Every structure is written in C-alpha cells, then in structure tokens.
Length: 37
Length: 492
Image (tube, rainbow over all chains, first blue to last red; front, side, top):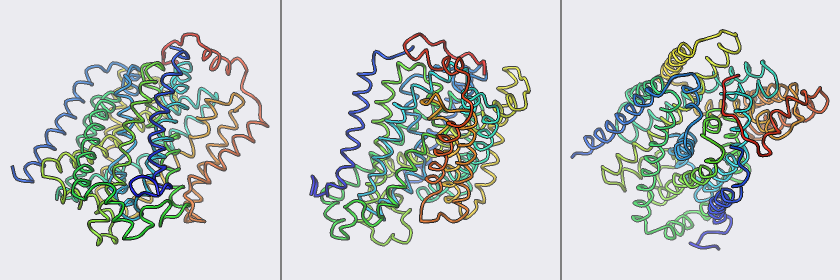
C-alpha cells in the first residue's frame, strides 16, 4: 500500500502527474539557450 | 436568490463576457492570418490555457466522472497520461518545431504545413477534407454534450441548451476569429478549473477526505482502488493512449503552436499547460467519490457528476460548476469551428482550387464558413443520431490517424518523402475506418491499428521513394541551429 491507503499501482499516477510538472519546469530552464527567436 | 435565478444570472453574465470578447477581438482583425492564427502573436498564458480548454470538453468532464464512478481510482491514470503525453510532451516534442517550421514554410494551417513540407498539394486537400468532414461529426457530439449538461444540471430543455450554446459560439467565432477562440478559451479554462476545484473540495469535505473515500471504495470492491481494476489493462491503457497521443494529430490543438508569439515564450507555456492540464484528474476523482455516495447509478454512470453537484454544492457554486462544464464544451467547439473554417477556405478554396482572394474577402468567407459549419453541426445536434458518442471517437480517430505521422516525422525525420507522407495518410485513415466498420476487432479502437499501419507505411514508402530536394529540406532545418527566424510571411 502507498500513501492514503492507495495501492502503489494507482498512487504512481499521482507521481506521473507531479513528475510531468517537474519535467516542464526543468525543460523550461534547460532549453533556455536554444531559442531561435 | 432562488436556485434557477442564480443559475440564469451566472450563465447570462458568462455568455455576455464571451460576446464582449468576440466584439473586442474583432477590432484587431485585418487579415486572414489574424483570423486563423491571431497574427502569430499570442502570448504564453492565453495559448496554453486555451489549449487546456480546447482539450477537455463537457463530454470529458461528465463522461470522465462516469468512468471514475464505474472503474474507480485507477482511472486517474487517464488523466496522468493526458497531462504527460497530451500536454507536457506534446509541447516539448511538437510545439517548438511546429512554430519554427510553419514560420519558415509560411504555412498557417496543418494541411498547409503538410503541403509545403512535402511539396504535396494533394496532402493539403486530403487533410482539409478529413478535417472538414470528421471534425463536424466531432462537433455534433460536443454540442450534444453541452445540451445534456444544460438538461442534467440546470433543467433547461436539451434543444434550448444546444441552440443557446451554438448561437453564442458562432457569434464570437465569426466576429473575432482565432483571437476570440483563444481569449474565450483562456477565460473558459479558469471557469472550468474553478468549477472543478469547488466541486472536488466540497465533495471531499463532505465525504471525510481522500483517505476515507479510498477506504470506502475498497470496501465496495478492492478493484475500485487498484490499477487497472475492473477495466483491465487493455481497456484502460488503450483509452489513456488514444485520448493522449490522439491530441498530437488533432489540428485544432496544433494550431496553438502555429500561433504562439515565439519559441521563447513556449517554455513558460509548457509549464502553464502542464499545471492547468492537471485539472483533468478531478472529474475521475469526483466520479469515484460519487460511487461511495450513490451506489444506485450503475445503470447510468453519466449521472454521477450531476448528482454529486446538486448534492454537495450550494446553488451559487453549482452555477459556477455548470458554467465550467458549458465552458469546456464551448472552447472545444470554437477551436474546431475555426480549424474547419481554415481547412475549407484557406486550404480547399484558396490553395486547392487556386482561387485568389483578397485578405478582406478571405476573412469574410471564413466568417461565413464558420457560421455555416456551426449551423450544420447545430442542425444535426438538435436531433442527434443515437450513436453520437461512438461517432465522436470514430471522428477523432480518423483525423488523428491521418495527420499524426506526416506531422511528427515531417518535423523530425528528414528522409520522410512525399509518397511516404501520402501513403501514411491514406493507409492510416483507411485502416481506422475499416477497423471501426468491422466493430473494433479484439476490442481495440481503430486509432491504434490506424497509427500502427500508418507508421509502417510512412517508414517503408519513404525508404524506397525519391527524397525531397536537399536544398528544400535544409531550408526547413538548417536555421534551427540558432539563427534568427523570420516571422511568418504568408507565402503559403
């Protein structure tokens, strides 16, 4: 069981959503120098 | 204020705001480029939140609640896939290159991009026809969803709800074109978010919190908290994939990348679209909460969200939620209307039939076509065919399986040839249609075999047919190494 009495198989979906937000922030920061415009 | 009066006041204010946006944006329109892509000068907040608003329609909110009710918490995987693939990765993988390449090629629309990228006028015509035909079917389903929301949440007759929604949308799209679509989409995303958050907070508060809901679901059936649960992997994964990857081939979504001001502001847009897109999880959670409270809705799970709304929200908040559901439908409908209009006027009449039109006349025709497409959708939606939701899945699958690979490989694989792109479009579309006509063998939706066969077609045919001229391909690619890009001239 993961947090909130939720099985890890389901809780992992929350982790994916959180990771997407982190990914977008990291991408926004690291792709900074690559702008063509 | 009594309940019906509250609903009517909130709704009237909201519809009035949309019309005002239409009037204000119409003053900024001077050319066809303004009508279709807002002069390619739309900022990151408006672009990304209007993307979210166009992504999730009323059907997703009510139907998503139905899935959450039937299958429980495992359905939040659909939202997770929508956020990661449909929002974050779509912006990272497609956004920047669509913006750059369409500017270099002077293309305003996705059919226009395919025609210029592959030097294939027939790709433009095929894509324009597929868009015009299937997106109208899609729009009928969206309107029906709105009519049902009016009826289910507010007690307004279906036909009145459909008429009112269509009239307002057609008015602001015809007046303000793309800018009206994205600015209303921007406001609509906030209304959707506010409505969904209000409902979720109230529902969780009255149900003792998320942990209590999970325990309660577990006591009804452990399959309601685990993944894949009762739905099974095939059903859950294919639905999550279609609603996520399908977006990568939907022109009304891709238009956001064409119109954004620059690739620079796209970075902020990617963060906003990801955070905003996360609201997609809320309908599923509310559906699951409804399962713990109203066990008698199994026969009609689409009543889960309306029932929950009436039960847990005070009238003013229920009115905001209703406005959010209507907003979700309107923003999707409007985005499709402008895309269909551009396919007919720009890609078919101006480019396909080679009818030179002055800018003024092109805008006038586009307005007329927007009104005509809106009225056709309305006429069908007033007496919708029984299978409208099946048709909706079928229509989106047809469009996405036609456009996905030529677009994606057109952005990333220089070796993609004209014949390869056309083969993928034809074979992908045909496979999807045949698969659907056969009644979805093996329980697979037509989109998956459509993109599978379409991928093989584009790879094999491109490898055995003549390459596009090197200078053409280099013109599209070489500037991505860092030189400045000229903003879009409409040389298309």
